[in-house]
Image 1 (tube, rainbow, N blue to C red):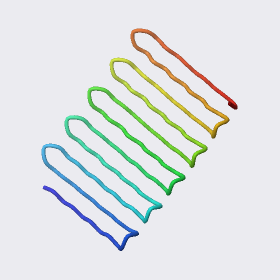
Image 2: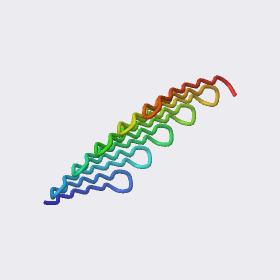
Image 3: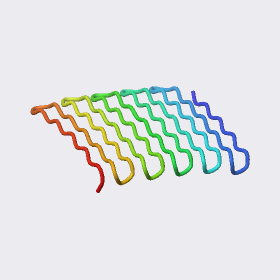
Length: 131
């Protein structure tokens, strides 16, 4: 079973939906309003579960989320506001545990955290203010 839906109004609005039911389930959704707003959602259930979400508002705000569940678990998150603020989160659970977090505010403040638990334990944390 496949189901598709598409709507477009001029050059400003576009909507696309897609559903596929077979050996694996796939669901996709996309919406765009001019060049200012874009939204993308995707879910995929098969041998491994995959979930993805992306949003963009002009050139100033971007959001990306992603999750994978398979032989190993991965979680990602990304946010950006203009050129001044950036946030990245990452977690990986597999044979070794990894956790990463990064935050940046302009060119004046940077924060980095890292944790790795495997054959050996690693812990790192860095903060920087100014250049």
